[in-house]
Image 1 (cartoon, rainbow over the protein chains, first blue to last red):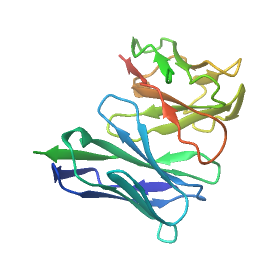
Image 2: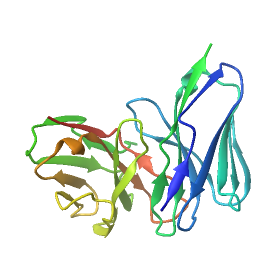
Image 3: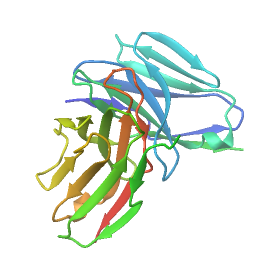
Length: 109
Length: 115
């Protein structure tokens, strides 16, 4: 079966750095996405990785290792507004997005 | 520059009632997706359209679920004889074309509660 694993919940302090991990086992791989979802709102796109390595976009970076079936999302200089769920999704061989359950990130002052 | 819109935002239905959920994608977007999201879970794929063609409906949980996009723009997800387990947020997303790169743009969702 297809599986995306990420921690259920993480807590971090405002101004700090946090890394959210995602491991996956899917039938085929055509890219990995990270989305942010505030409670009661739609997911919004953060990043896309299809090749191994680090993609940096402002305070957010995303890393991919295809051989390990592993990705992480790195958030720097955390702000209170970063409190949200972070969803990892993998596009499989059928070009369907397979989603993880999301990691709820709680930012404390 | 309107984004994806969905209506209604909230729907309460009695068990056994039929419901219709509407999605207006971003103008010109070729691909349209429907997802079901239970509380505390990630979205679960339901079905996918490219223009008016329904290319994948493998995620529809039963034959009570039906989706259409007759003119390649607005889409409707219909659920017949609703059951309590159908209670969830139904998300619609669109993307410019069928490329594997493109991000999906999500609507705000319709929260369906079946009593």
